[in-house]
Image (cartoon, rainbow, N blue to C red):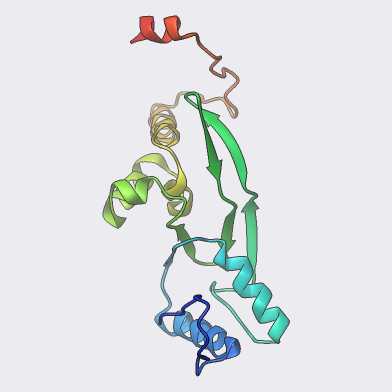
Length: 169
């Protein structure tokens, strides 16, 4: 199903109610474990529109949705980045195409392999950085060897001068 958001002067034969009902029915009939969305920002928009129009709407296997984290900015390796908000549907995994690193570097099989190795849930693994995933793999290895792992990392990396970075390389 293709829904255009362009500003055309012609009217679509489908109402927003029809689109929401069709989408909800389609997801229920196909019953996928994973939903790949171009942006997970669709989740609150779809549910808000369904509430506004009084339409029964469900994307998860159970009713509702959750916001896991708000959007934020961060700094990594001297560059400022943007992290979009993250959402959860009860009973399904959301892969956010606008906020995925590993999914773009591999495919579903690669991500499932990394889920097994790192112990991270698929939804989290899809947006995680390679450093975050490698830490998960290290923690899994330490646990298998019965090595205690701190609950939180207390050793945060400090800013380094260009000279220090050059020497380290």
